[in-house]
Image 1 (cartoon, rainbow, N blue to C red):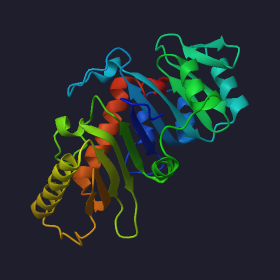
Image 2: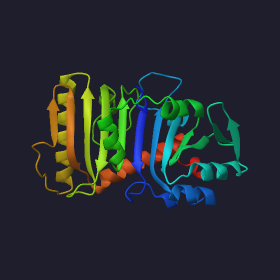
Image 3: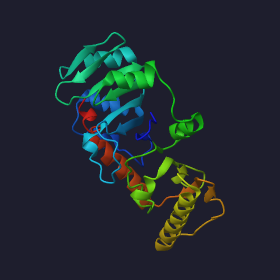
Length: 276
């Protein structure tokens, strides 16, 4: 995960503020409810395999998606459950085997203990990228921070962008070399936003910094909330903008939650998978 023009999202579904697993599995069978109950984290990578054009109005339903459910997934027991489910067909490959849903076109299997890999396109390509020929593209420090956060988002050289709820125009966000955002719990806040934005120029970095500060101050005033210490909240150095523990309102947190849930629903990342 982390290739140029790919959007990477990860969420800790054990935290109550983001994904309601019971809601996702409401219309699912017993196997799905059991799998989701045992899921700790969902991570996905999304990209458009047909176009590299920059757009601010993407149709995510056409995107290729691959990712993983992480949790309590014994490899033999989980794959056996899929094998005996009549909706899933076992596909043999020289490297491994997986299961493909007959109507959804979604492929899945426990690739290794605790990791259920899935794809709506070429499962073996996803398997090689994440398991057999894995080459980390996101630096270790960033990957670990995203892995331990409630919510993580990463994009390198994006040609499409999501509305991340920070009052920054999407057209500006698409002029970045990379963007990493995490939502974390701290001692003073149940949801604080941190991140690192690498712009294509120091001038653009300064513009983004001004937009972020203005958005934060306006939001705090509108909600009659204290500003707190602004000293190191947003720091600019050369072409980089660092966000340090920006406290989110419930509305902003809800926006991130809706963005993640809606994105996965339109791409087939969670809702179709929940029909497993």
